[in-house]
Length: 447
Image 1 (tube, rainbow, N blue to C red):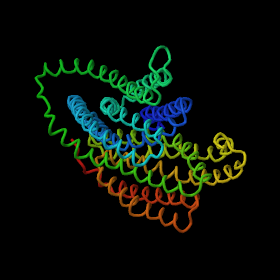
Image 2: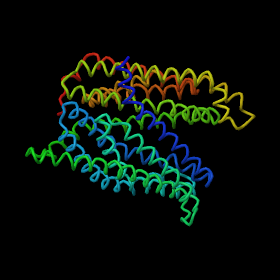
Image 3: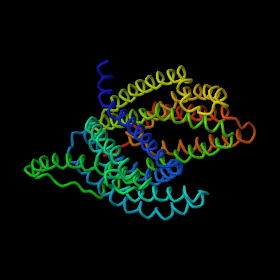
Image 4: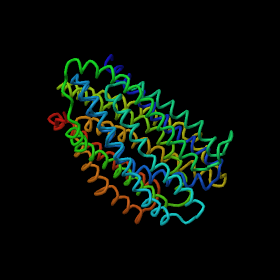
């Protein structure tokens, strides 16, 4: 039992941080809804496009945390600091590259958006967030430095600070309060970038203060300086598949959402409402996945693959148990939850009836999805990023999306479409569990 509490101590700040981020997205949307319906409509496609571009680079930078976990497990604080330096270097380079995607993204939005009013807001939000991506990368690099060492509570409280700062800036910049210019959706974008920059500054200041003291001790020992370029090459070697996984996984889900839009207006509204609830349930699992990657990385750094296996299985048990309880509660209380979204009384019963069916399917896939995310996190923590990428590509694009297309042609109902996702997560989860149990990951050397 003590070992489970040790894991929870590491994981809970990350999991709550993910939930906090989901809540802050909801707050942003609430402010934008008050500003104009066009701003609310523009926020989702603009943020999805920005994420698909920034997510690739962000995941590569985040993978420096796996190296830090392994070096921390090996007791090499000097190389942990070297990983932070490399993460900062990569962040600055990726930030410059991200700016190059701004014009291409605006052209894509012009082709996909019919309303000029919505388009102007989409391009403004997308351009600001993408150009400010350097702060997201820097913040991720600094967060990975502390998370890899198991210092997740510091990252959590800095995350809270940044999100509170974002919540304060939102009304000031969106509505032009207290003498600030009224900027609408652009204000929300600037608030997001500023809050991310604040988080990076605080974490970087703490890391710099600690690094100065440790460097003084290292200089007294005449320690040789680590070579940063070879280290950067290794981080890119394992981090690029992780970044590609993030983007392509998001792409497959985006395609699925667009296909479900053809199942009917009421069905699509119910599906979107259920996905909103699903994200709140799923967000903590991302924290468990990061926790699994950190624990496995630290154990591998110590050369203890048996401990890595035990910690991964314990994290899996905790995560799946947690999401199973939440999923059952969601099904039990689905009517009051869905009533918040069922505004039209003429379709209320149809909305709630279909919503119950989708909630049952959601509960089924949540358990397997949680297991998939945690095991893939453990595999990434061991450096098995290529398998995670290729297995996802094979199942998502070789099996799931063709299945979705077939269902949309021959039996285009929302329950049938959602059932394909249940099948998808069961298959991908089974493959990753088999890969983990085979133990191929134990022979991978990152450091």
